[in-house]
Length: 266
Ligand code: MLT
Image (cartoon, rainbow, N blue to C red; front, side):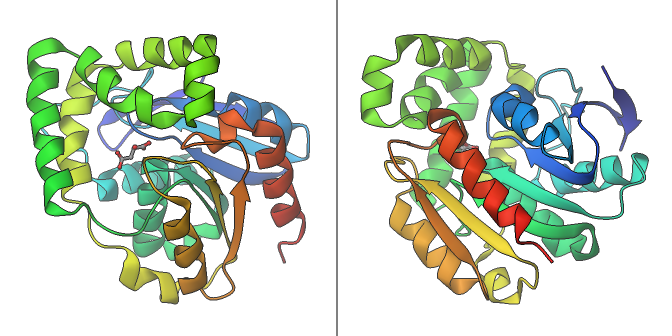
């Protein structure tokens, strides 16, 4: 499994397939395994799929004294593309991965061929949400990653999925339990202080698809529809039966929608 020293940390990524590069950026506080169905599908469709564990997550290390800002995560992603001699990639980011995609486009627009913004938003945290991030940070310091698990996992899935698909929920609880608490504590201020990406939306000059679970309880779908409208030529697709983890909850539809978007790229 590939790992490289990048920006002072050991960065791990999953890579499969050959063809044009497709970079998959995971959500918080997760790891690259959330993309397994997309890695399998797109690597079989002539794409070179690259799914990193962002710093501190999964098998990647972090510098716990440094805040994991969205800009820093974007710099890691750009450095990984450089390391792999990739000039440009289609960037797919879910939730926090979307915040990182905005940061990547802001800092390195030449590296982004197209954007797929899944279950994410451009707005910064309102004051109460920021406060909640710092409270969660203290809870994680005290109790470990289990505190993040209890706050985050119930919000990941559509209500019907959460109550019926116990195996799926248990799996993702286990994933969050296994995340390094230092990574969560380093990322929470980075999430809380992330910049407003709304002014960036009208400046996006690459093809963009906004794809969003119809029943996302963390980020209501209406906001995503408006975000797509603010991006010149931005496309919007809602994923039926899915909450915040639209790529997992309805992966077949998610993959087909993204594939149609990719097929139409210039
Ligand atoms: C995520 O899924 O990446 C997080 O929910 C994002 C956030 O907490 O804002």
